[in-house]
Image (cartoon, rainbow, N blue to C red; front, side):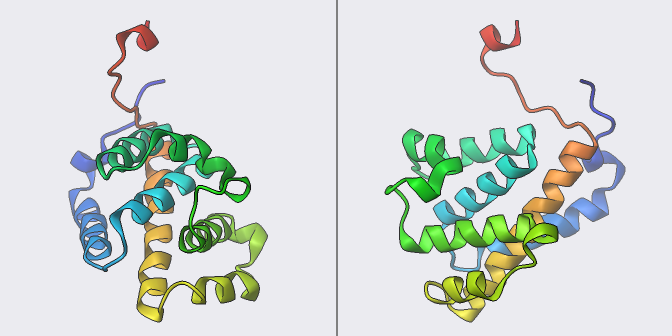
Length: 153
């Protein structure tokens, strides 16, 4: 697979806008570990290898455990995730699959039990943003770095 283009070079103003959104999300007060779980889960659903790679690395830097990252795709069946994380992950799946889910009221009500209105707003923007990044990176065939030379052989 070959990258189709480097969007950072071709459309720098668009990327500056996306980075500004990411900066605002980072200052929202939402826990950085939660932000990475949400980014990673959406990226798993969308099949974005570049973003999965990046957000696994970022989550590990934030102190996330290997086992929780391995179990993220099965969070509903694992007791390792908090009620707040479960609400955020459910909202992530709902909005990432919005064409099928329609973002039902019961999912929003579950979210309201664990997040205030401002947190919900930023969480919703975060989910939208990671879905944009996933589509950009998948559509333009971004390739993540390869650190393990055995895997690249």
